Amino acid sequence: MIAFAFNRMDLEVSLLAIDPLKRELNFRFAPSPEGKFSKDSRLTQELKFFTGIESGKSEVTFEKNRIPDAVTGSITLHDYRSWKVLA
Image 1 (cartoon, rainbow, N blue to C red):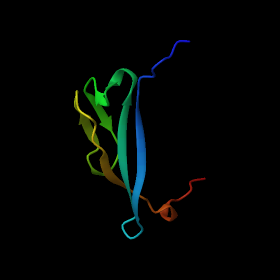
Image 2 (image 1 turned 180 degrees about the vertical axis):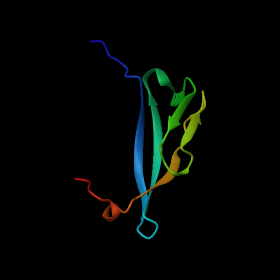
Image 3 (image 1 turned 60 degrees about the vertical axis):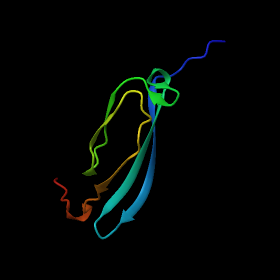
Image 4 (image 1 turned 135 degrees about the vertical axis):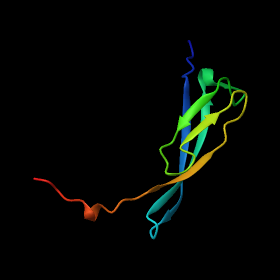
């Protein structure tokens, strides 16, 4: 039987907090390289990670030969009641 290593970056996303007054969700992204991207849990090449988060770092560079650090940030919840439906 041939075993295939899937080349990917797994992400564990944790919801850290919900702030209803600021209407924010705070997240933690913990990357885990797999396949050709990983050797002894370290990256085999430099990778850029785009989170889309509003506070914190929206673009993170994971350096080669290092264990990737977790990234934290928040996104804002919008007031959907103010939306108008166009007919």
